[in-house]
Image (cartoon, rainbow, N blue to C red):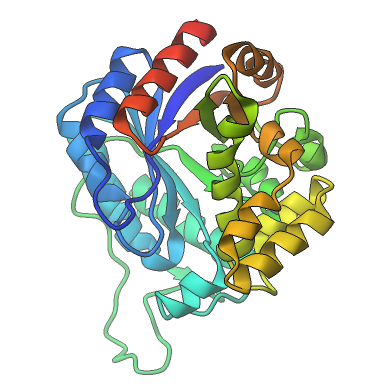
Length: 340
């Protein structure tokens, strides 16, 4: 099992010294550094900055929201960054959720599975550069011939030759159908809220994965002598995603927690969060849930949990960024020593 660094997305300000974190991860032998986006900073610009200051570490988007960019726009960006980084890009994509897609991007969220399939087909056709790209789908049409069209569009081929015609594309997915799509058509999968022992939830879907399929879960790390104290930042993260990252009726993070056997707790967390009682929502997160989804606690406790990850289907364990630069560095160094 390899190690990676998950920088996540910027909050109210840019992430402190994120280029130094990436450089330190590379020096420790980490395989990949990932950036994310929500509805603030974008996912590609930090990776472009990191590319200039690193040489070997792979650059991952975790996750690029497909509603933010047409397949052609994403392909142009991927081709450009792959050239600038000398072939180090790994493109992780996902559909996000209806609150962001419809509220932020002004796009319909309906039929996300269909949209993902069509998006991938166009993206790969552009990179293959075998012929001018045309596509007639239910979600995308190239050339566009719908309402408002002038009828003047024509199939085009990328002016720039891709450095690689097969840039790895990973899917961020939490539902069984989406995980199966990842296994069948993508090069890897970014799981979320997945304990090392519970990949059996998607065993049937993962059976379709081809050789070399990558599995890259992100894990919160909080190494402290007192387990209760160590679990607190993990609970804060979980309460935010279970309670606030998604509509009440359509929260994919809550659903995966329900599948893990914490349905009652998930409902309580969401109810408290949406009622404006965020602090209570944090303390409503069960210790067992926070513990199984993290590398938190004393070092010996973390070592025991690392052993379970080594025996899981995970190919790369992404170390979640901590609130401070110094803590993130300490966590990376400890895990690099333990993984060897």
